Structures are given as C-alpha cells and as structure tokens.
Image (cartoon, rainbow, N blue to C red):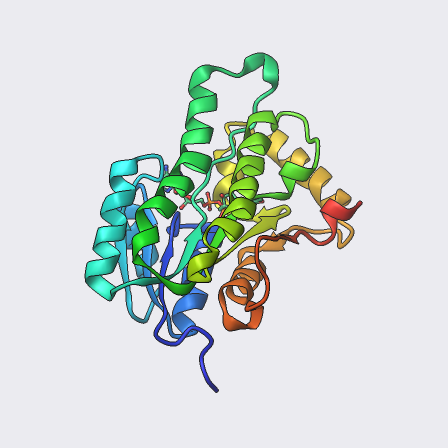
Length: 250
Ligand SMILES: NC(=O)c1ccc[n+]([C@@H]2O[C@H](COP(=O)([O-])OP(=O)(O)OC[C@H]3O[C@@H](n4cnc5c(N)ncnc54)[C@H](OP(=O)(O)O)[C@@H]3O)[C@@H](O)[C@H]2O)c1
C-alpha cells in the first residue's frame, strides 16, 4: 500500500512526549523524514528509542527565536526543504486569574504563541509549495473552563494565526490548519502545577462532559494530524478541526 507521506520532510515540535511523539511515530510509518524537537535532550534520546525510520532529534526551546532559526537550518541541511510543520509544543499550567503573574503569562504566550509564530517565519523560505502547517490548539479556546484564561487565550491567538496565514501564504499554496484536542491522555496532566487529587477530579469532570464519555488517546490525535497533513485533506485550509469526542459541540 502506498504510504501517505512518502518522501515528505516534517518537523514535529514538542515530540518527546504525548501527541507529538505519537504523531512523529505515525509520520515515520507513513514514509516521512521527521525532525523531532524538545527542550530536553535526554527526553528526546528516550523517545528516539521508540522510533524507527528516517528521523533526527534536535534540542530546541520553542520559546527561543534563536532555537527556532537553528531548527529550520538543521532540518534544511539534514533533509532539504520542508513539507509539513506540526507546531505541537505547548504548556498548559492552569491558574485562577487572581493568582496569575507576569511570569505565568509570558511563559504560556512565549511557548504557545511566540514559538509557533517565529518557527513559521523561520521556515517560510524553506517551505515547499503545497506545504502544510498544522498548529495544535485546544478546544479550551472555545469554552470557559475556569483557571484556563491565559492558556485559552494563547490557543485562541494561535487559532487566529492559522486563519490569517491560510490567506497570506496562498501564493505558495501552503495550507495552514489547526487541530483542537479535547481531553487527551498524555503526560501534560502531570505538568499542570496542580495536586494529583485535583488533576484526577478535573479529569473525571472533563470525561463526563465529553459525549463519548472518555479521554482520547495520543494515537487518535495523531491520526487526525496525519489526515490534515496528507493529500487526503488537500482542499481543507484555514480551519480548526476539533478532535474531542464532541466536547466542543455541547
Ligand atoms: N492532552 C490534552 O488534553 C490536550 C488538550 C488540548 C490541547 N493540547 C495541546 O497538545 C499539545 C501537546 O500536548 P500533550 O498533551 O501531548 O502534552 P505533553 O506530553 O506534555 O507534550 C508537550 C510537549 O511539548 C514540549 N514542550 C513544552 N514546552 C516546550 C518548550 N518550551 N520547548 C520545546 N518543547 C516544549 C514538552 O516537553 P517537556 O516534556 O520538556 O515538557 C512535550 O514534549 C500542547 O500544545 C497542548 O497544549 C493537549
């Protein structure tokens, strides 16, 4: 059977874990050459043990413009021009508005918005005609979950960038789309900065609100990203695709 991404060059940011790692695996299975990024080299080395195919890891902090430039230069030199950018790296520390600090705000916006924006800027000259940019947003940008004001705002900003670039980058026939996960079982829930019991209660509450009654898996997300990045989605542009068991619709 023909592979869906045969010969394509892809970057997946935040790929040492969760959705990024599952997507990088699937891209490799489908014949892509993949550069996986993360901010911790040892975590990338661990992830690399699970992978086979034509891939490379590159340590890059998504909030650093310098790292984003270096990532693009590395990819271009290693594999040539780029066909798929999956801007996935992100953080989701939840915090009530009464507790937020400038540091909290800057961390979230630097990683979730500045990172993707400047990675796109760095990559643009090296994106092949017909390339695809997939940004990982979140259904939180369409909802009002308490404690997510800054996180939701960052994902709404990223969703807006997707929409604008679908028009702005049309000269090179580049498609820009977002994937908006609902609750997905990944290590991110251990990184929210909340006590374990609170994370568990929040998880149960999220699952109850999902019409399918459960969390999704990183592999289910990866399948959606593959679809969006592949020629199967050749006339899909500018949209945000919710992969959330129906959560955003109720
Ligand atoms: N899981 C969900 O329920 C859910 C729902 C909606 C949206 N999302 C979005 O999905 C994306 C992936 O999250 P996930 O659930 O797969 O969580 P995850 O397993 O924590 O993956 C996030 C990845 O991004 C990396 N990352 C974070 N900050 C970075 C930085 N400054 N530079 C480089 N890499 C960085 C993480 O590295 P470290 O291991 O070093 O932290 C990790 O590899 C995020 O953008 C998240 O907002 C997730």
